[in-house]
Image (tube, rainbow, N blue to C red):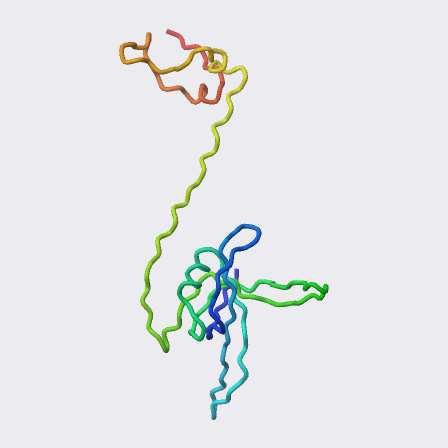
Length: 175
């Protein structure tokens, strides 16, 4: 992955939208890069405009923090953002998909506030179904394997071995 950095001024206030497919936060804005040639004399050149796309929490933070005219530093990678209009005309364009965006501090100051990251809930996989010939399935007429407070198990209770957890029969032990 090749990262690129663009430093320029935001052309309009970033507005957050939600993507149609995934419902994820998305911000798209343009950055104007003013080019000057410094040599014997400074020469003004016309600005270059770059489209920037931000997704997820980055998009939310950009939308809440940055405004038109602010200098920003954008780090990301170039992606094909081409589209076809209603008339069937194909428009080719490239955008910088941002991985990080920050305010430029050359002409401004900033106060940084760390936002809380949302708790990431990872669903646990479902337990594997027992095999049909498993001893657990043959004795499923009982209601519970738990003992009441007054009952004690008839013999020593041991932790199931790897073989019994997989539903395989455990070899008989010699006493």
